[in-house]
Image (cartoon, rainbow, N blue to C red; front, side, top):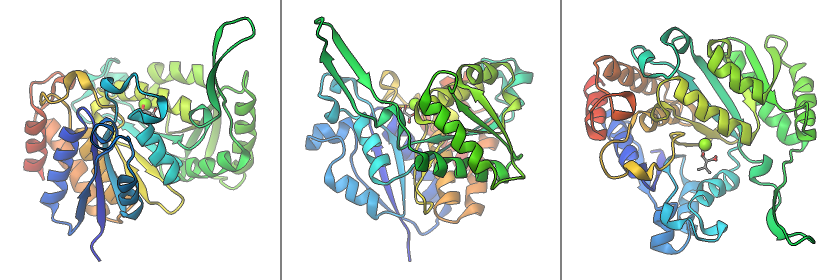
Length: 348
Ligand code: IPM
Ligand code: MG
């Protein structure tokens, strides 16, 4: 039976980059069925809600979801539950996609696009396994006025042991398929949430004797990511730390426009998105790099649709297009979004 892919382009550059990913999937002629729905600011403007019921239904029904980006400055003044970002947070929560895989490796020839020295950047081949359903993102939050009359904001950081355990397993399994090294990143010297995290990760480690486990405080991890990123294989960390470290890792490999991601539930169903945002400053100008979206489509084929061979082809085509010198402005080139997509298609 034909698999259904929900395409949720979203805001800003989301539609431009998902269009290129769709072209690549079409060219492979995989017999997929596509259904598109609005999300984020675009959905708010059209339907009054960033995650309309119909969009959520489609996402639940589909075999996999290809997501663009959300974020729209014209929505900044809205109440939080109506802001575009709530769409992606809502999808992650409703679909229970708790495991976010964010691979970062340098494509040959892109060493000079990294802000790191080429020999340091060239050694990067890591994956961040980010927990996606908990932490300060989903803890109790609010603002109030204190007895002293001061405005106060709070966001509760919390994890229970089951939440840590399930993401720890994904971390160990990911590492086992790679170079067998797992680094758990926390802030256990200060945070109780992190102490629990560390304790549980150590317990789970007993089931993976072939994976070498280390622990690192997040501040040190941020430093090591620019000092010696080649030293990392698999990183497992909480939602907030993973958000921050994955943006940092993206710049180490040249551009945030290069990093795809997979957000998986316990059955391997997933939502696939570039880790970059909606980039409103360059939206609609054909300047966006579609590689992260195209590589997200490759991850989708591999992780949710059991189509490893076409996934390999897409990744090889992106590498070949970059090798041929075609580059969008974020990589120091002058190619448009469509021209980059053309180059990938040509390489296919
Ligand atoms: C990401 C983004 C999101 C996050 C935003 C858009 C809510 O930064 O996917 O990394 O913070 O998770
Ligand atoms: Mg982020």
